[in-house]
Length: 430
Image (cartoon, rainbow, N blue to C red; front, side, top):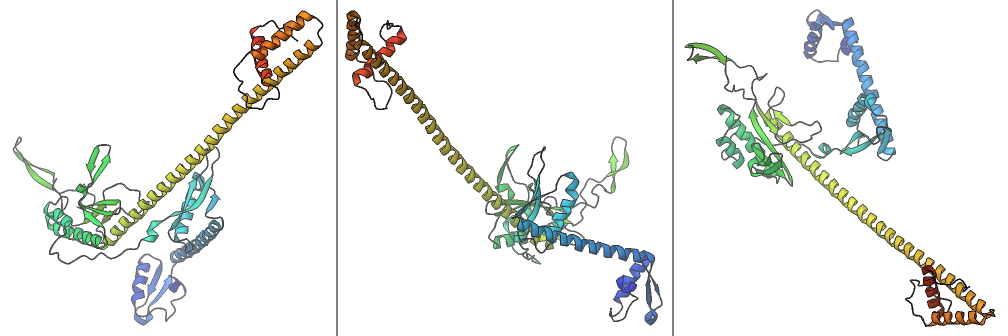
């Protein structure tokens, strides 16, 4: 289109292959062609000019968006990997486009992708952009050789060949050969290849086995796959066949319920797994045959293994962090309990110390009162009272503070306090 718009300058193309593309553009009325051989010329139409301008605008828009993605990556890296952005429904399309453009950028760190998640609440929405692990960057496709003929099948492929289901007889050999190639290459990479029926799983129906025809195990990751033959395009269209109706003694046309062989095979992951948009079904098509998709199948299994191991490691780290936080909380709780106990003991001892001081002052006041008393009967009663205080033995009060008065005074004060609270006749004792 640009060449025709520039006036078809010479020395741009060699031969005549470009005239084939020009003929296709002329059929769509983007250009017009005149002459033959050396007199061959092409002229762009108004429709072609409009298409060319839209292509130029699209390329310029792509370059602008890519430069914006590069700028955003630089800002995100400068912010330490976390950056607050606009989010919500009104920004969803723009954020999705930004994520796609960042994935295409050469500045994107290998093994990471951009994610925009909500970290706020309904009342205070807040969205952050951050890097998340992207394991497809860490796994490359490696070739899976498919032999022309198989002399001895892998045990898994042999079981499938001898008990086929879902594949017509004329295509069983091809399906078994593909399973054999997948099994042999997996074993060569150090993976375990078994039948899915040998692995148990627990679900709502209880303990069952995995479905499929082959199970590939990498570490603790088990991925089961099933190979089937695809029905005709549309699936529902079946040719009619005549069937005899014994009741009416007549022939009628009915749908043919027999499987119609197409020769198109499909390998599918039988277990539900969040592949984040990656391919889960691999089939024969116009652009790719199933034998050329075997490297992508093994790559998907290896990606799932890395993702599961990473999630398991993150769960372990989270559990350890939870344990550390629990232990720290328990240590703080023990300190708070000890402080509370000490505070209680401090209050008890302070109250006892204050009580002992009150009783000491009472005894001192009683002695001073007796020394100045002139009534002999009252003095005798007071002295007998003090004598009784000296000879009375009472349990020690719960006070660990050192006493500033003799032990007899401590006993007397405790006794006085007990009698005063019990209503003893102390009206003339101070």
